[in-house]
Image 1 (cartoon, one colour):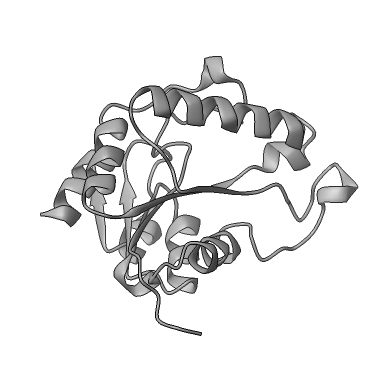
Image 2 (cartoon, rainbow, N blue to C red; image 1 turned 180 degrees about the vertical axis):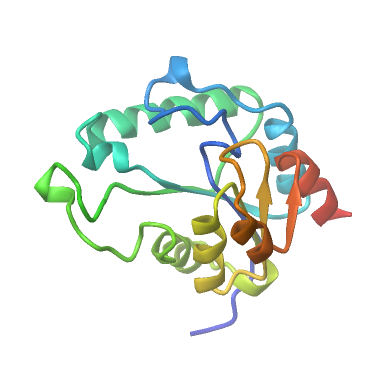
Length: 186
């Protein structure tokens, strides 16, 4: 395998890009957090690939289908494009070990804290994980980043309440995505 050529920002979705709400899957419930678009623009300008990595256990719980998730994701991309922002990839995991729907009931390599979603994007987009960073709002985000060899893993306070363990595992904690990106790019 040759050398990896691109830096990336791996970004959790709910609580980092958009408001944390329970099982966001309808565009009317998708509310971008203040500064998120500006942060994505800054990353693009600095040459970072922008990769969203999101656990979507609502699929395994039967709250929405994969087809509904895909339609919603296309609408999210359209909304971001209207703001002049593109994402290089959106990786998701529909699985859950104790899922009500048997077809999604499994221990997988993609559900964070496992690194599968990140590793898939690393391979597909020729990303150098050591030169990259991750921004999440839970310990499982940091754990996935570490398992994938991501250079730095940060947390933001815009999503879930941060445990002491999560704060201790992270390379830094920021008020929001924009504050994190500005610091990384400084």
